[in-house]
Image 1 (cartoon, rainbow, N blue to C red):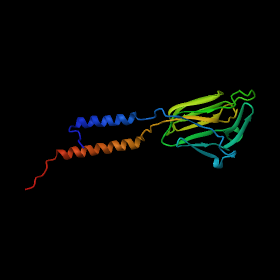
Image 2: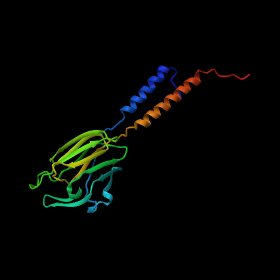
Image 3: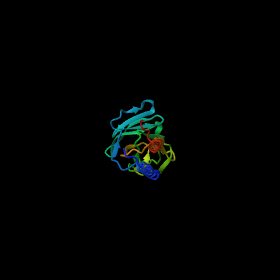
Image 4: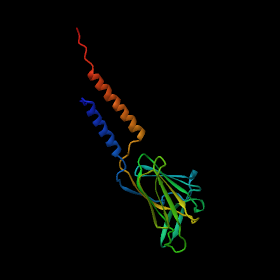
Length: 208
């Protein structure tokens, strides 16, 4: 391995390494869809539902979490995710180092059936709990944008209640390094380079 011979050259190499790592983050991946038609009807054990999609585990939690039949033939027939009394909240967590670039749910009771309109608020957070995005309304599709979404909380607005269906998402295709891991690795590399440079500066002993 040919190491740089000058301190300035070493500094440039380290700077490029740090910049490259900082630029690696969430980039467009492929979209996915989770519906609840294959989930058994009734209360979800321990109020915790886990579904694996595209190799990533999604966890849904909420008070009295349950799967219900939602049948408004001929307009719609299928299963939906809801809570006790439809009051929410429903929390969606991505159990992975990958995150979502966006996450969207379908609000079935947006007025299309003519007798009820649910109003939903969604709030997205990153893996450290930092705020990313929020939106609310009675629109058919409620979308939250990242990148970096690790958790979303869905809540009712004005006591309307709500059910959700068809969770659409786009997962990041590149995993950003954890900050602690990155800086530890950078410090280790810097020490290694410094020791090698110091070693090169020492005169070699010659045998008699």
